[in-house]
Length: 303
Ligand SMILES: *Cc1c(COP(=O)(O)O)cnc(C)c1O
Image (tube, rainbow, N blue to C red; front, side, top):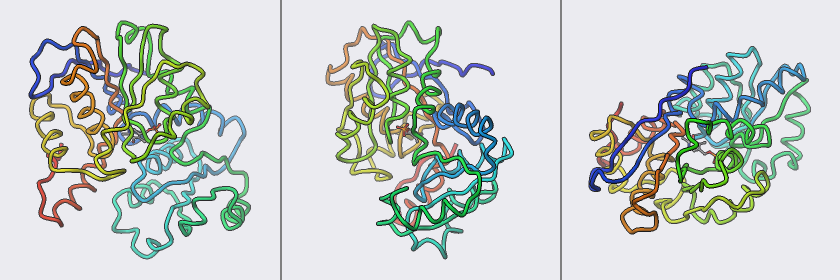
């Protein structure tokens, strides 16, 4: 497969003296975008090896992973089932962009109450649901497992070996774990979680990587998962105008904002060669704009 471009970029309010590059994994696949493509890669091979019929996974109504799993199933001739958090959306999932796309790609849904969802396979209800799906292969929430980490490690290769610092957005930490595993000994990884109170992610990453070559910057969550501020929206729009590179509001926008702050305040030295990984997620722009319009707020430029 063709390798994704590594492009220089700038920040609107910083001079051009920094060494800033972005690896465009958002372009890796039209639907299985960014890090989800890499996280699915070895899971799909395993699913085939086991001759499984149905790929089952978990997600919330805004989950990029759900769409990625649906698309991967369609492309590889697996049926797909999504166990979706929140029984309350059972009658109105058609209003949700993510679930509509997944459904168009053939995914069937099982909606479960939040308290059951939290327990995953330990929930009696979820166990019953799984028992009714013959010959299935289970991919965990967010797609993170050892095979996902193995795939994400392949985002780094010879072309990226000259960079000092690699940055990524974080949800479950699987992608950062992969980058940690795939990095050279001199390279450092910096992760920017889009969740509030994400300190637990250090241990999540250490489940899959035994290297201590990473830092997690907990500051740039903007209030939590799928929360945004006007300042963040402005930043993403300015970044797009200047670089012609779209960022999503849930993940990559927050990472880039955090990276800019770390350069501005000297936490990252100006001599460092930096590679930001674009983990995709651009379909999140439309869902966010629907919400922002309703609140009469400024919206993201739709690319
Ligand atoms: C899912 C997702 C992430 C989070 O990846 P993890 O491996 O769960 O940390 C980051 N960026 C984008 C665009 C995503 O869709």
